[in-house]
Length: 250
Image 1 (cartoon, rainbow, N blue to C red):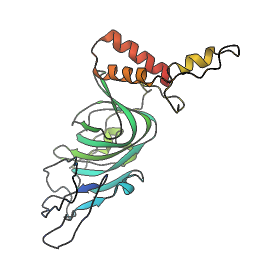
Image 2 (image 1 turned 45 degrees about the vertical axis):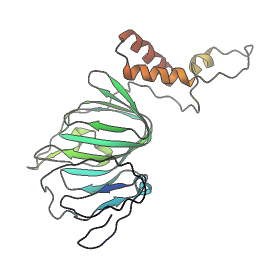
Image 3 (image 1 turned 60 degrees about the horizontal axis):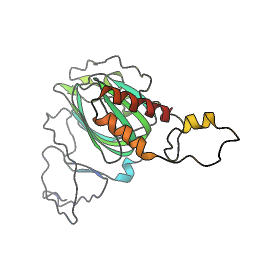
C-alpha cells in the first residue's frame, strides 16, 4: 500500500491491524489473496491534528496486551484482552466491532439468548446494546469502537465495559451508568486439558475398588450442548443443556 503524495510504502500481512484515516488516498498492491475484515465510519473531526498517514500495527504488537493504535475521539481502534471474568454491560453510546484473536467467551443478550465466540469470530455490539460478557478463557480481541453523535470514546481499556465505558459528551460532561460486575452465568472451574463429560461427578463417586479405566473424552456431547444453547428455542432442552454445561464447567 502506498501514498501517492509522499511515495511512502506501508506493508502488512495476516493478523495486522490497518487504519486508513479520513481523507487518505493511495494505492493497494495485493501480492497474495487476502481476506479483509473492515469497518467504515464517517465522522466529524473530533480531535484536531489527527494523523493522515495509514496506521499499521502488527499481529505481534497486538498480542502484547491492551493497546490503543488509533484514536480520534469518535473512533478508536486497538487490542483488548481480559482474564476470566464476568461483566454486565449497560447501554453505551458506542458501537463496537471486534475479532477474537485468542481465547473464548460467551456473549449474552438481555433476553437471555447467548452465543459462544472463539478465535476468528467477528462480533458486532450495536450502539445501546446491553447484556453480558463471560470470559471463560483468556481472551484477546482486535477492536474498533465508534461513538454516537456528540460523544467521544474515552476511558482506559481496562475499564472500557465498566462505568459507562468511559464515555464523555463533547461538552466535557461525563456520562456514567451503574455497571457492577456480577456472578458468571457460565461458571468457570479449574482448567481441564481435554473436555471429559461428567468428570466432576465421576471424581466424587470414584472408589479404590472401581475400575481404573480412564474416563472417555466425549467432546461431542460438550459441543452439542453449546450448539443447543446457541440455536434452540425449546426451553426444556435449553435448561438441560445449560445444566450439563454448568456441571462440566463448575
